[in-house]
Length: 415
Image (cartoon, rainbow, N blue to C red; front, side):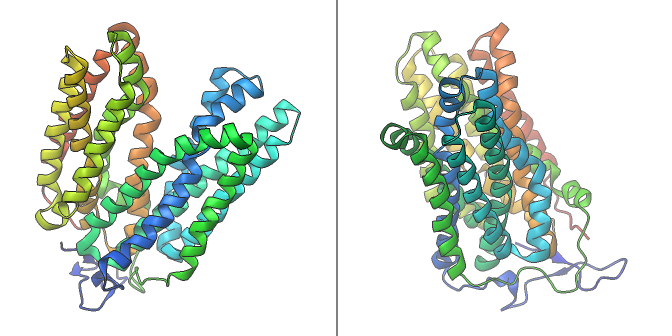
């Protein structure tokens, strides 16, 4: 993988490869597992703090505090909105102050969110309690922007640019594992220790990640004295890859929201098994083929992934039985699995190292935006056309992403 950098801050710098042996682009840790694994654990603990309260917040707002389901949805969605709005700031912080300080700021902010949840548990005045929950969601959204952007950037600096795909793939496994384990853990805590136990876990989990992050040395990332590009220019270089990720993420978000209702409407059982099959296909492909985007390039991997995901959505749309729908869910997970590392590899080729933090923040922001938009959009489709139409729309999103991947084949340097 070739990354271009500006050798001087002159008005019209000439691109030059930033791959000097021993330099930051070669990686600061020789052992790849040790380079990536600690930051995977950091991401895992951080996202556990996000996932643990997620399934219980709606019950807290609606059943315990007595607010409407609309208000409960607002509390849940506020974090994603804040995350989208703060990705640029997180990227700039990572580029200017470094990825390590960005992580070290983000994780304590996540613990502050837990403190807000804990205070809410002891407040009897419902509006005040709700306000503390909203404050916690704002803090957690900002924290996610910081620690995820910083951890991905830090992992790339430790492992080297030639392992960009592996960094994204392994950290993605940590993220989804946290969501998979966090939800049942949160529900168990609610039953055994009530909402207070959930809040305490949200405080402690990021601190565990912080303790590990403090043991890791900073890694050189930016080129000293090199010019940083404005946000709009960075996004201008990676928007096709980001939009492809957003479109490829829509089937995942739609499945998470509507697969249970789809199975119920068809008179089938096993909707939970369908999501398990999606997750199994997703993780298996990442474990076995995480090296492919680095080795053969992201475009080919992305194209094949989108074909598999589109076929999976097609099967879900037309499935006459639950068994065939299960195959469709599995193929959707298989196809979605490598899209993020594949597009991430290609997007990072187009930016210089000193701009990579803001590029990562913007790139992940496309995924955040897809999650925020897909649920309401899929609901609008399902209303008049039925739940099957949601998966037809998912297939069309995959085909649109395929067209973008084909259009973005020619690499360009940022400077």
